[in-house]
Amino acid sequence: MAANLIPLRRALLSVSDKRGLIELARVLADANVELYSTGGTAKTLREAGLDVVDVSSVTGFPEIMGGRVKTLHPKIHGGLLGRAGVDDAVMAEHQIAPIDLLVVNLYPFEQTIASEGVTDAEAIEQIDIGGPAMLRAAAKNHLRVSVVVDPQDYAQIVNALQSGGTTLPLRRQLAAKAFAHSARYDGRVADWLGGLAGEESYAPTINLALSRAESLRYGENPHQSAALYLEDKPAAGTVAGARIVQGKALSFNNLADADAALECVKQFDEPACVIVKHANPCGVAVAATLLGAYEQAYACDPISAFGGIIAFNRPLPAEAARRILERQFVEVIIAPEIHELASAALVSKPNVRVLASGSWPTPRPAWRDYKRIQGGFLVQQGDDGPDDPASWKVVSERQPSSQEFADMAFAWSVAQFVKSNAIVYAREGATLGIGAGQMSRVVSARIAAIKAEEAKLQLKGAAMASDAFLPFRDGVDAAAKAGIRAIVQPGGSIRDEEVIDAANEHGMAMVFTGRRHFRH
View 1 (spheres, rainbow, N blue to C red):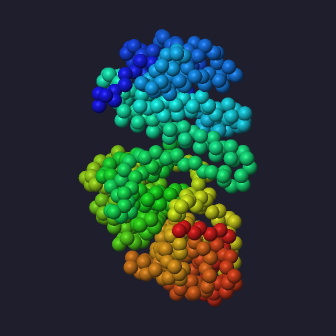
View 2: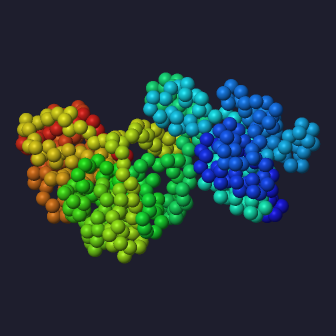
View 3: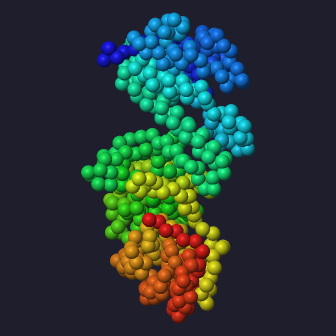
């Protein structure tokens, strides 16, 4: 290990994110490391009482073009790229001093383009050129040079100074992070420029920059390796950005199911509970309290709720936490926050995974949905909902009552999160039976009725939602036989008239939404 140790004699610091900068620079200066710097960074360091050598003094050339050109010079890049024992002579000939440490993070391009009212010219000025060039040079020459792009890594440099220098494993780790940082940055610029070029939906390339948050025990099955990768800043109110309150490590399936549960429960304004099993809701309810919502969601399918994922759209109170623990085995509980007394109750079951997602914005920001296929990805706009019931069309002879309409709206909000073919039976803010993922829609309807019967729930007078149009009247006939009185569906089948006639024969109300919600 000692043979790989490189002492730090000279460092170049040029950062837009100045968190921890002065503290790091002071440690470097105390260790007799010579400091090079540029522009605003040099000014910040001097104001802190530190001695700094301007890059322009090293290059013998001033910063020009408003700072666009300052580090693009052989004395800087030679200092970063020079190889020990290979380029010593040429460096001595041209008086190029080796730079052992580069601390750079790039112009805030992404924050700039996210700002309201920013002009193209303002965004272009935040496209960093010299920074990525230096990062790549230092990372390429990591056998000798250490490169840092993240203030969170400053502590590693401080520790290395105390040990006499940086090790090769550390330099490799930092170099990989530098290339990833540069690649992500360039990807954001490419995506933005592609949008300006007038692409109708998507730029010619889509750049995903994800960082491994943790390795998972295994994937969907024990023979599959897996890991969790995150965006740089996971959106607020998501599983990816959630705080772990307690419990053993989350599995691949836990994360996928928790995401399905949380995204579904976000659809409701009233206190709501969603119980998910194998990516499908098995019970959903709204009520005056979270405890009431949980009781009704559980009642929909107690068998499937065993070992499920439970999501709430309000901070979890102690009474709901206690009721869950005394009644059922649960894998994950997720809510925006967990009340202190609820946390105290949950401690009695230390293996239960409890997550605090934080609150989420309303309406939800636009997002992209990705589906992996062999050799590529399918990319689409996220399926945002719920839909606006005011735009729906009553197509039956009988008008739905206000309660029936409310039941249809609730069932429709749930159906969006059930795997196709999806059928949801509901009444008074609670699901009664859910049929998911069948090849035939009428079979899904029968399964939903079987689920209601198993749970001893009456379907008479309930509403039904179908995520896509009913292609034949058999689905209506099956629903009528089960006691359903109102049906909401997208419409759009060549047999719509046949289906509407069936609804009229049974005295049912039927509403078309004009919008389907397949979920494969």
